[in-house]
Length: 71
Image 1: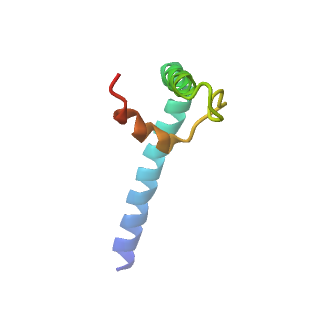
Image 2: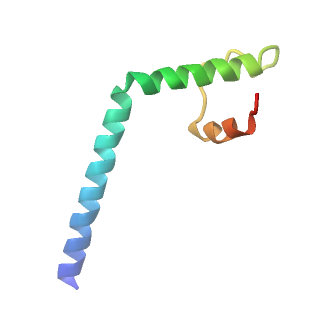
């Protein structure tokens, strides 16, 4: 069981390393930043004239709601 625990830990470390590298690449991505800027502009446009207009940011779970918009 000790060997299997160590194997699991090594696999977990590898997975965490892959996720860490992916996050670093996403943070460096100028295209991803531009997409988020457009999403924020879209949300502020939709919410203009309300208390939610001119918001400086959004939560990532709000991205799930984008599929609700058809036009």
